[in-house]
Image (cartoon, rainbow, N blue to C red):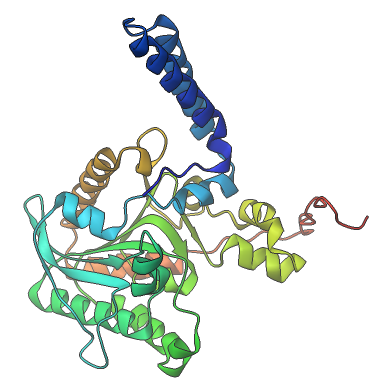
Length: 334
């Protein structure tokens, strides 16, 4: 895949082009690594650090959607040993937008599952752009029931814009499939760990997200609706998605502060797409640490803790509503 540059990353691209040009000219003239290139590399590193330390909520959404970001199968390949994929919901078909099976993370045998996106048009069409059909949720439920039967911890990777929104999903009762998953996940007497690795969109994410611990990567997001969908509803214009992203409180920091997520998993400088191997190491270590902590809880305490966690969610304030009118866009009538 060709390099993909986010709009706010243009200063980084400009510096990289200048560095490459300096080194090309130096090679052509038989000169050793030019001093100016080293200076620009230091400037590049500092610029990247400054940019990623001050991302807006909308910019974090863009990072979470980066097409080079590691997906579920990338994490499975990186640190899940002896992974045996299990297919099908035993009712209709096998949904490729949900992948799952049994494997080993470190010395822990686990049931691991997650939503899967594609990286190009062909693979995105094959997995519904990461939007599961009802049979995807029913496959996930089948695997989780199997895990509960054999006492295996469940690790769920969340990366989806939402459940498949087409007529096929409605015909096959996607709302019912998600609702059943929510109910049943409260009943499994094994540790459940959810990791938001990219997008966490609405009920499509929650359908595999009822967990004892919810981890979220530093530049991932988790929200009841996409910023574009929120802007379309509130202001009839998806172009106000940046304002909606700020209002939705969907970033990792916001979610931990609100008690939705439990821990932020750090990402390499420049995002998980900049160094997928390092990102995988961070995710693996966080999973093993949290599973070790959940091991201290017996089955009854796991169930009680999971129920209490979700019952405690929800923060409200009484008083005047904050202003949510977005700034005018270029060309808007005043």
